[in-house]
Image 1 (cartoon, helix red, strand yellow):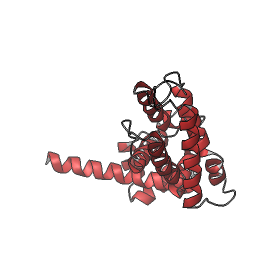
Image 2: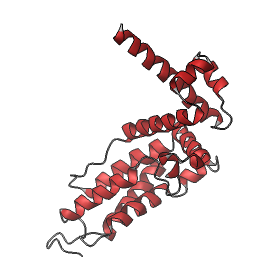
Image 3: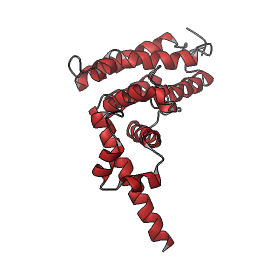
Length: 213
């Protein structure tokens, strides 16, 4: 009995969250109300309030779910990579191609719309690091510096910010505003490769001495 009740609880809670996410992405947070979530999830308002205190709590769970989705899609960067340029380019391609999908552009708009709600995820809209990618890149550069693959004097935090900023370019804002054409896969691939080369060349070490070039 206990197991069956737990399964039903999880299923109902997830069904409500799934419905809310789709409505948030389609219509925005402010336009979506509990009545529409109830209708989409085939639940009653009373049932929704049994599992969530209100729309703001649903939003927190929605943003967490969207973050997990994104992180699973892009996968992690390999801190032990021998070829830093190739690893940065591969990771950058996964990141930017996933970020510019319709679903994640809508998620970005949702974060912008709800940043005032105090969500940790929504607050990261300022530096446009929606999914903790900048922290991962910082760790990547720290490990590379420790192994002598890049200059040990390199500002690894700045490198992470610079890579993210150049990677986004104008693509994210233009897609979010529905301005301009969506870049092709080849265009993005070339853009990411140039960014990776620029970063690596800026902090390259001498292959003979391991010291700064």
